[in-house]
Length: 140
Picture 1 (cartoon, rainbow, N blue to C red):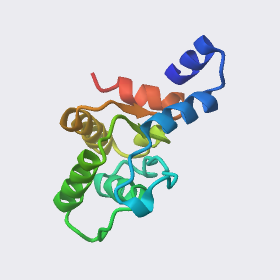
Picture 2 (picture 1 turned 120 degrees about the horizontal axis):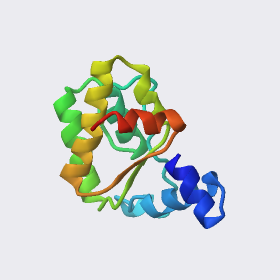
Picture 3 (picture 1 turned 180 degrees about the vertical axis):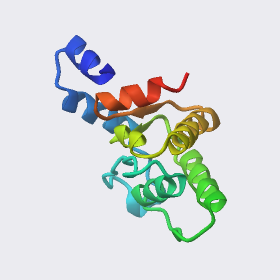
């Protein structure tokens, strides 16, 4: 809904707006060998699970990690890495997947996104269907 309205305001497609946001949020290279390497933006897991989210985020950033590490380790690794690359904005695709879990799982996933915003002092942009808007709006 928000992406749709913003795209209509500027006279561009939602996909064009998404690509523009993605280009602005592309992280800096961690090593010289990574310079110029295209980066993908993380997608919300098919179920709102914290571990799966951090695994997807670290995989997207091409970070060395083990998926079997404790959740706290995955979270610390992700936060340290996002600070190191100088994150300006985090765009999460498929945000409507928040609704795939139970009410409790939805709350934890929304708290995870709020925590990322607060800790990194960077905006988190959730992209998805209109259901994504409803999922985020339920968090009053």
